[in-house]
Every structure is written in C-alpha cells, then in structure tokens.
Image (cartoon, rainbow, N blue to C red; front, side, top):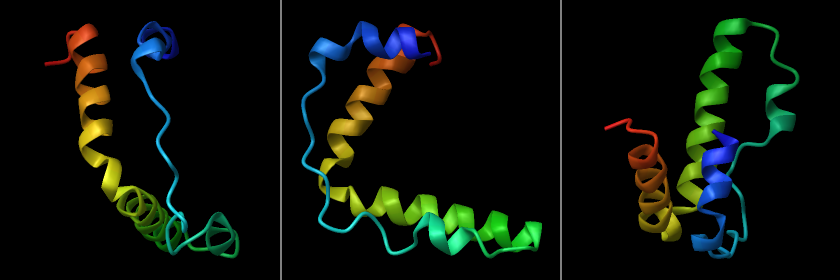
Length: 74
C-alpha cells in the first residue's frame, strides 16, 4: 500500500491542516479500561479528526479513489 501511495506522491499537494484537529485526542483514550468504551471513543476520535479536515474532503476522496483504482479495488 505504501508503495502505491508513493507512486502518486508527485500528484499530492500540501493540505493546510485545520486549526483544531478534532475535539477528542489520544489522551482521552488512554484512561479507558473498558474495551467497548475504548472502541466507541476510538470511532468518535477518528470521526472528529476526519470532520476537522472537512474543507479538504473532496481532494482526499480524489486521492483515495486514484489509489483504489490503481489497486483495482473498484
């Protein structure tokens, strides 16, 4: 997978990171002792980060589709 991504690296451009990278941090996950709660919070963490990059979603989708196409994942 990394080899495929680097194959297209010359076509990727810098995306300005969001000012706040989500509302949940890894520090919020550390104290979790219940595996179910950890799993639920991990999903919320990932969603929070993805949502914070909303202005770049269309570009990221294009990149992902290009890689999927190259790997014949369609």
